[in-house]
Amino acid sequence: MNFWKNPIIKSLGWKEEPKGVAKVMSVCMLIVIVAAYFLPTSIQEIKLLSTIICSSTIIFFVLFAYVIIKRFL
Image 1 (cartoon, rainbow, N blue to C red):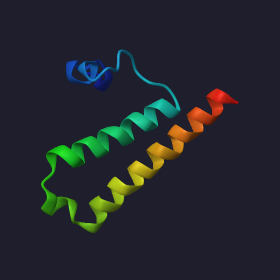
Image 2: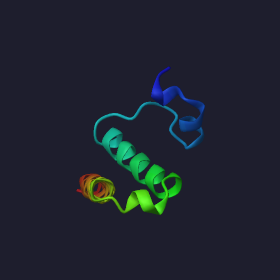
Image 3: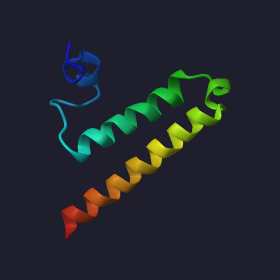
Image 4: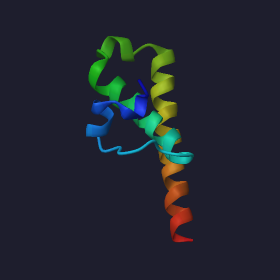
Protein backbone atom coordinates (compact mmCIF):
# COMPACT_ATOMS: atom_id res chain seq x y z
CA MET A 1 0.00 0.00 0.00
CA ASN A 2 1.26 3.45 -0.88
CA PHE A 3 2.14 5.48 2.21
CA TRP A 4 0.33 8.61 0.99
CA LYS A 5 -2.92 6.69 0.32
CA ASN A 6 -3.13 5.47 3.92
CA PRO A 7 -6.41 6.60 5.59
CA ILE A 8 -4.53 7.82 8.67
CA ILE A 9 -2.32 10.07 6.53
CA LYS A 10 -5.38 11.34 4.64
CA SER A 11 -7.07 12.15 7.96
CA LEU A 12 -4.09 14.36 8.85
CA GLY A 13 -4.99 16.59 5.92
CA TRP A 14 -2.77 15.34 3.12
CA LYS A 15 -5.07 14.72 0.15
CA GLU A 16 -2.32 13.85 -2.35
CA GLU A 17 1.35 13.01 -2.35
CA PRO A 18 3.46 16.11 -1.69
CA LYS A 19 6.21 17.01 -4.14
CA GLY A 20 9.71 18.45 -3.61
CA VAL A 21 10.24 20.54 -0.49
CA ALA A 22 6.79 19.70 0.85
CA LYS A 23 7.66 15.99 0.92
CA VAL A 24 10.80 16.62 2.99
CA MET A 25 8.87 18.92 5.33
CA SER A 26 6.11 16.36 5.82
CA VAL A 27 8.58 13.57 6.61
CA CYS A 28 10.36 15.81 9.14
CA MET A 29 7.03 16.69 10.71
CA LEU A 30 6.03 13.03 10.95
CA ILE A 31 9.34 12.16 12.63
CA VAL A 32 8.84 14.84 15.28
CA ILE A 33 5.17 13.93 15.85
CA VAL A 34 5.96 10.25 16.29
CA ALA A 35 8.88 10.99 18.58
CA ALA A 36 6.96 13.49 20.70
CA TYR A 37 3.76 11.52 21.21
CA PHE A 38 4.61 7.85 20.90
CA LEU A 39 8.14 7.40 22.23
CA PRO A 40 8.66 7.37 25.98
CA THR A 41 10.95 10.08 27.34
CA SER A 42 13.58 7.54 28.35
CA ILE A 43 14.04 6.57 24.70
CA GLN A 44 14.10 10.24 23.64
CA GLU A 45 17.08 10.86 25.91
CA ILE A 46 19.31 8.70 23.71
CA LYS A 47 21.76 11.01 21.94
CA LEU A 48 21.16 9.61 18.45
CA LEU A 49 17.38 9.95 18.66
CA SER A 50 17.55 13.42 20.15
CA THR A 51 19.93 14.44 17.35
CA ILE A 52 17.49 13.09 14.74
CA ILE A 53 14.56 14.91 16.36
CA CYS A 54 16.47 18.20 16.65
CA SER A 55 17.80 18.01 13.10
CA SER A 56 14.32 17.21 11.75
CA THR A 57 12.93 20.25 13.57
CA ILE A 58 15.69 22.50 12.25
CA ILE A 59 15.30 21.20 8.69
CA PHE A 60 11.54 21.73 8.86
CA PHE A 61 11.82 25.35 9.99
CA VAL A 62 14.58 26.18 7.50
CA LEU A 63 12.49 24.79 4.64
CA PHE A 64 9.41 26.54 5.99
CA ALA A 65 11.26 29.86 5.98
CA TYR A 66 12.49 29.12 2.44
CA VAL A 67 8.94 28.48 1.23
CA ILE A 68 7.57 31.63 2.92
CA ILE A 69 10.37 33.83 1.54
CA LYS A 70 10.00 32.30 -1.94
CA ARG A 71 6.25 32.90 -1.88
CA PHE A 72 6.51 36.57 -0.92
CA LEU A 73 9.45 37.46 -3.18
